[in-house]
Length: 369
Image (cartoon, rainbow, N blue to C red; front, side, top):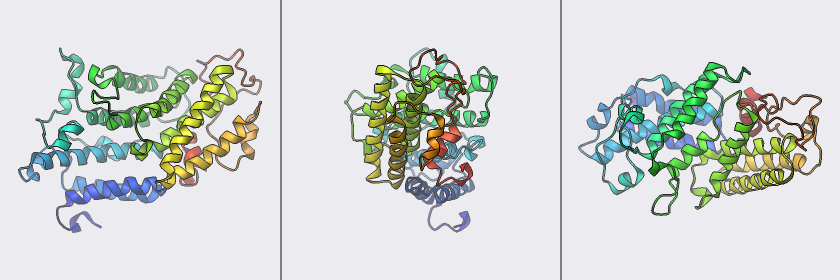
């Protein structure tokens, strides 16, 4: 439906299309989800939702409705980035759009209808120079990570030197994101004992960072941390289903590590993390078809790989589903006993974002075949 023909106030259509795009995505129809999200973006830009004046102009004197419009814009921004990361696009469309929309407030304030004066992007960008430990909303940290995704995607995935300036810069942005969290945002469990779901999504996204030339140690740490998030209290199904692809990527990384790197107790721990991940994805599969697909593919790969004592890369050719990752292992490399392996050697286990996503979603993404 064209932007100029939307019935009623088109801002509500943007909200509806955003939710629909996420639901269709998790229903394992990526192309249709992307099309729906593009339509939402087209309408949002057409009506000027990227401007801070929009919320006041169409807020009808309600601070709650004004906050709703801000959240709609930023939800669109983050989702656009997540979709682009999964499909391995060089950027996402809203990353280059100039915006001065003010930042969302905390979830508790929004739900209670008690909307404080909004903070700005300028406030956030100057936080490291602030004398006090100023905290921003959890949504703000998710937005910042979405912006970093744009920078990381722009780096690309062609193999390069470990200290390539563009790679170092992208990695530094991610490290800074975590380093400048105030004390109140360093624990995902709030004072009320409840999990901060928005911050959970941000950390899940952070731990599936798509750097193309990441060292083995960093890749394994990211996969371990990503899976570790799901040991936090709370029903799995209450998490956003947008974490499914990152969760699958973490499991595939652990399976690859079991094949070529880990041994002994670390090998057993990695297997346990794969079991945990499968349990989480099975819970999602009760609602979302994408979860069911991920369960079947990871289970098949894990059965073929982890049920044998020694595995060679050619073994993956017999598995009737995608490979878990690109494994640039020298022909004379040792088996998974780990003797003589340098975990900081970037050529030992190169986990490529596009190939790992292909492992999760090859049937939905023909361009990866």
